[in-house]
Length: 154
Image (cartoon, rainbow, N blue to C red):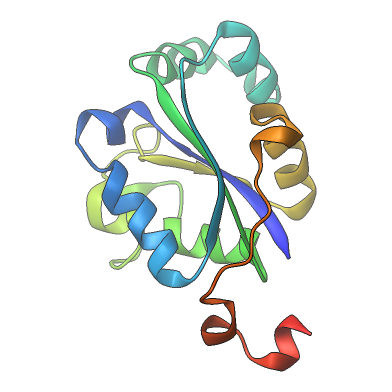
């Protein structure tokens, strides 16, 4: 099973959308294996957004991400990375499809409620950046056999 990272951003925290966002993932059938509420340090944000560090808008991203604490969650499931990205919708929220998290509740590129890993490789790095191995829990979900077919879960 794949794992991926989702950050619930300050705009979602301020707007009281934490539960609704997590519910979207749970109702889809993804398993929550890690969750934490944290203040994002400069060092963590510099590492996480290192690919944007030389952009003129980077300082604004860092300020935005430090407006409130954020919530980091690790989700698990088959094709989890792509499934989460589909549920989130495209980054430019005004153009995100209705029925997606961003399409239903966001209007901005930056204030777009969530960050989601963009590939399996990135997900591995991002999960490790935000969670120690001991913070990710292994457990058998009672719902697995109703979410996936026997062929899918082997």
